[in-house]
Every structure is written in C-alpha cells, then in structure tokens.
Amino acid sequence: MDADRRGWLPCVLGGAVFVVCMAGTTLPTPLYGLYQQKFGFSELMVTVVYAVYAFGVIGVLLLAGNASDAVGRRPVLLTGLGFAAASAVCFLCTTGLGWLYAGRLLSGLSAGLFTGAATAYIMELAPHRGSPRATFVATAANMGGLGCGPLLAGVLAQYADWPLYLPFAVHLALVAVSAAVLWRLPETVRERRPLSTVRPQRPGLPPQVRAVFGPAATASFVGFALFGVFTSVSPAFLSESLDVDNHAVSGLVVALAFFASTAGQLAVGRVGMERSLPLGCAGLFAGLALLAAALRWDMLLLVVLSALVGGCGQGLAFRGALSTVAEASPPDRRGAVISTLFVVAYAGISLPVIGVGVLTGPLGLEGAGLVFIACMAVLVTTAAVYLLRRTAHGRT
Image 1 (cartoon, one colour):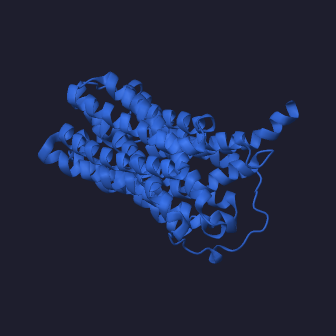
Image 2 (cartoon, one colour):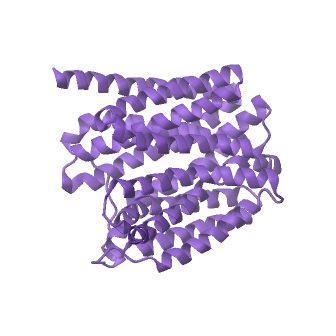
C-alpha cells in the first residue's frame, strides 16, 4: 500500500503544480471592483481586461500547443510558471489599465502552455498511464485550480491588509515553490526534439467530424461563456444589485461554478458518454434560467444555484463534447480537431463577455445580462434539439 502511495506521489505533486498555475488565472476575479474604484474605468473595461486572457490562451494553443511533445513536459511547464510569475509581478506593479492588460495576457500565455502539457504530464506520471484516477487528478487540478483562485483572493482581500497586493504576493510565493517541485519531478518525454521542429497547429475539421462538431462546439462555447460572465461581472452584480460587498462571498460564488464543473466531469462515468452532452446542455439551460431569475428578482440564492447547476452542466457538456469529437476524429487529425474545439471554447470566454460589457452602458448590468442569457439559451437549445434528433434518428 505504501509503495502504491509513493508511486502516485509524483502524479499528485504534478496536479498541485497545475492547481497553482490555474489559480493565478482567476485570482483577480473578486478584485475587479477595487480596481474600478482605484482607476475609475467602466464595466466594459473590466470585461475587456478579463477577455485579454482568452486571446493569450488561444494564441498559445494555435502556435505552440504541441510544444511539450517535442521539447519535453518540464521545460514547457517551467516556462508557463515563468509567465505566471511575470503576471503576478504586473499586478503587483499596477498603476493603470496597461499593467492589468499585461498581467492578464501573461496569465493567458501561462494557461495556454499548461492546459495540454500539464494534463498529459499528470497522466504520464501516474503508475498506470491514462488510468481513470490519473484523469481525475488532471480534471480536478484544472477546474479546482480555477475555483481556488477567486476563493483565495476573496478571502485575503476581505480579511487581510493590502487587498490588491497580498493575493499576488502569495501566488508568487506559491509559483516559486511549484517551480522547485517541478524541477525535482522526472521528465516523461523520452525522445525530445529541438524547439525549431515545433510547427503551429492549424485548426481543421475532417468531413467525418463535422456532423458532431457543431453541437459539441456550441455547448462548449456556451459553457465557457457562462464561466466568463460569472468570473468577470458577477462580483459587480453582487455588489450593485444585492449589496454584497464581501469579497470572500464574491470569490466563493465564482469558485462554486468551477467546483461544480469538476463534479459534472466526474459524473460522466456514471451518466455515460452518449448522454453526457445532451444532459450537459440541459444543465446549461437550467443554469442560464436560474441566472435570469437572479437578475430579475435580485436573489443571492438563485445566483448560487445558477453557479452550481450551470457549472455541473458545463462539466458534463464539455467532457462529453471532448469525448464525442475525439472519438469521431481520425487518429492523425485528432490533435488538430481538439485544438479547434478549445479555440471555440475559449472564444466563448472572450467575445460574449465583451458584448455584455458593451451593452452595460445603454442597458445596465442586469439588462445586458438578460440579453446575454437569451442569446446563449437559443444556442444551447439548438444544440440540444440537434443532438436529440440525431440520437433518435440513429436508433431508428
């Protein structure tokens, strides 16, 4: 038993490093209101600052998403930690919007490097490569890390001094510890090649994938858009409409969505891959409906329920989408197809969020939120109807 535990230790340590990196990407979430008060910028600027992160992730996925297959996992992950540290330094030095843009962009570059490389590394460090337990560690580290960021920053901002500085100083220290841990972990790529051999990955859709890619990509887009709105504007809604000025509560509400997504992804094993995508769409629709009710009647309980139900739906839908697309893809094109799905998903974090920011001026935060919900509901309903008709046709 002790030997088995020691065998899993590198995998768990790799997961802990993944948590630290992903936590840094959501760390500013409960602090945007404080930045608004300090620098006097609009809600639109909050959404743009948030969305810059997604552009960094998409850029890395397209240009260097497969770099760790060539040069090794550890060099890529150490570079990602370097970007995470640089992002924290930008936030520590913030004197205006330019620093916030730089910090978010560097955070996106860090997440882009970690997303694929860390997932592969954790599964390769496990005693049995690709086992369900290793997949659990990678999944929990990714979404759990995203949830830990706003929770940590919210608690520190509410109950400690220097709310705009202490969270990033703590994260910088955690990044340094993570780098030391990563330095002692083994490399899992045996045949390494020079960085010059890495080529940009062009998104591509072979003909046999196109029928399933549409609904899978739509559900992924809506799920990530829901997360984007939660992490960028929900603290402002809690403060302005519900008079919730406690940063720890704001951080917890956002964290719940990510923790629920982890639970949703883990539930796929019981639900089954075939049903997870349509059920995930239903969960996303229910989460959107609860969010609309929360905006209409200004109820904190409905916001929390929206985070839990929508997050669980996102987890079911996204893991189902990944599995469906991967299964339909030819082996020699699978990487490019999955990269295309991730690009669509991260576009969901950026474009709708900026749209909400644009509409906040003429419609107010609640009106902009309702327009967003209506658009996302139409998309996810269309995807669900297509999936149900396709399933019924397949049975016939």
